[in-house]
Amino acid sequence: MCGICGKLAFGTNETVSPELITAMADTIRHRGPDDEGYYVSGPVGLGFRRLSIIDLKSGHQPLSNEDESVWIVFNGEIYNYQELRALLLSKGHQFKTRTDTEVIVHLYEEFGTGCLEKLRGMFAFALWDRRAQTLLLARDRVGIKPLYYRLTGGCLLFASEIKAILADPSVERQIAPEIIDRFLTFLYVPGEETLLKGIRKLAPGHYLLVKNGKASVRQYWNLEFSETSPGRSAKQAEKELVELLSDTVRLHMIADVPVGVLLSGGVDSTGVLSLAVQETDKQVSTFTVGFDGQEFADERPYARLASQRYGTDHHEMTITANDFADFLPRYVWHMEEPVCEPPAIALYYVSRLARNHVTVLLSGEGGDEAFAGYNNYRNLVWLERMKRGGPWVNGALAGGISLANSLFHFSRVNKYVPLLSNTFPDYYYSRTSNPHRTTGNGLGSVYSADFRSAVDREQSVEPVRVLQAQMHGKSTLDTMLYIDTKTWLPDDLLIKADKMTMANSLELRVPLLDHKVLEFAASLPSRLKLNGFTTKFILKRALSDRIPREIRERKKTGFPVPYETWLRKDLKDRVWSILTDRRTIDRGYFSQQAVEGLLLANSNGSDRSKDIFSLLSLELWQRAFLENETVAV
Image 1: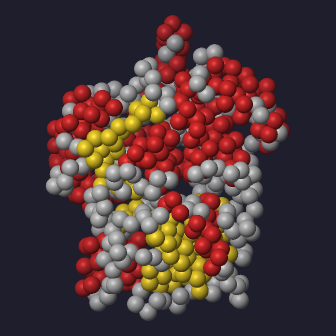
Image 2: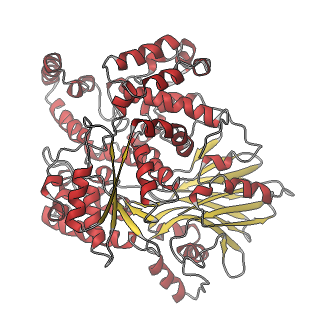
Image 3: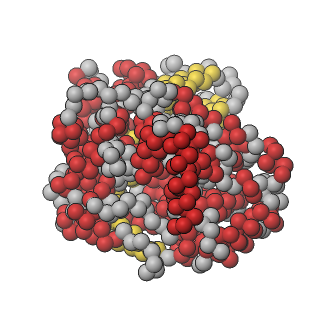
């Protein structure tokens, strides 16, 4: 796991400054404290920071082929590299290291851009072909590893993190205000754009090829939802899934450094642990986090159950409201994109704990997106089924839901009423959707008049509209899973996973997001993912014998960071101070009166914590990345 960066100049006599590449790499030193390396030759410069995982002694980068005509900087892990290495040796290629990085170099020599289809893993890399004068940037299929770039008429800049691109003094820090509404609609930023003008994300499953100053972006992989074995029984699918998961976790355990498991007390992380312990004769270390206060949900008792079941060396920690608040500026600095993801802060702290014991962590991230684990998948599938009863049924449903809400305050149920009159999938933006965000985001009421008039709603939801069109004719469940795999997963969860762990120089691996696991899940009929009211049906069956009953049967809670209470009580004064500050209001996006009303409503018990945390993240982001406010890291 590492950090990469670089620049390609397009002018005939343009050269790249070695000092610039060094400065770019220095900004992401936290991604790779073990080693650094540079290749600068004429119009191209490649920079690298290394976190040593495999072939600790000879894994220095940038790395080249035998005649130094092909150079690479690589971030990630290729889990099938040994198999690919054997193939390449049989074809006459010669290796000077035992790294997965060198496998990519020779694979490119043999197959060109077709090499990407043979890689199994998480990766972002830049490969310079000196003979062809071509630069290839590529990102893994799911977007586990980030890769940003800035393309102008004069050059291409790229890096694992935005801050490395900003190290180039020629890059102006300008906000893209049209993306603010997109962020506040989704509570993250889906699509290839970022909040900084001109800086883009290379989309998952895509590569960018630059030759003679001309760049083209192409897709090399897509997740196809198509039932491949219609006659496959649940028992047969269960057997295939266990074999696939066992193989996947075995590959994800490959490392020359200690490997641990991040435990959340849920089915997915416990299942991953059960498979990991069978792949090693060493005691596995596990890690979990809890929160200060008796009134908060606590995952730690369930994590202890899993630890006891599998005899791990278990470690726990507790974070407080002050820990949460103190880290907020660094949270924004490391995340680089405003994301309403409070659990990311908890992940930072538990990663810091884990780094004292291991260099690699396995996580259960991705099981919900692959196998339909979220309750809103179940709820919306059933809602769409009931809507087929026609207007009379819809009217009765709406009336019943509204009555229940008025009597029992079932706001979580009442939020589905607006969806009765909307057509699926037009209303499904992502799993963060709610009634406010189906007709405009819930923060539209705090916009200033000028900003509200400038907002283009269609532009805000454009990335999802494209995905909705691609899934025309597919089932309700598969459409939601596809949209979330393409947006929520890479642009929220995986950004969190990468940035918070790499902030502690720790590699996080996500075996449930191996592309073969995703393809298997996508090939299953909906009933094997959502069976009646049971979410994640086939995954729970496949792992049932490995998971303690208390974990298997507990209600799904997500990762219960108590930030709602903290924002309302412990951190109230800090939040008010930042969001009503003259600097915040003078940006012109929000009405001070409306922001104060939002804060007051939250203090009085109306839960607007997500909206408030989003505004807070956005303001701290602007201070860090537009005004270059110093953040102590």
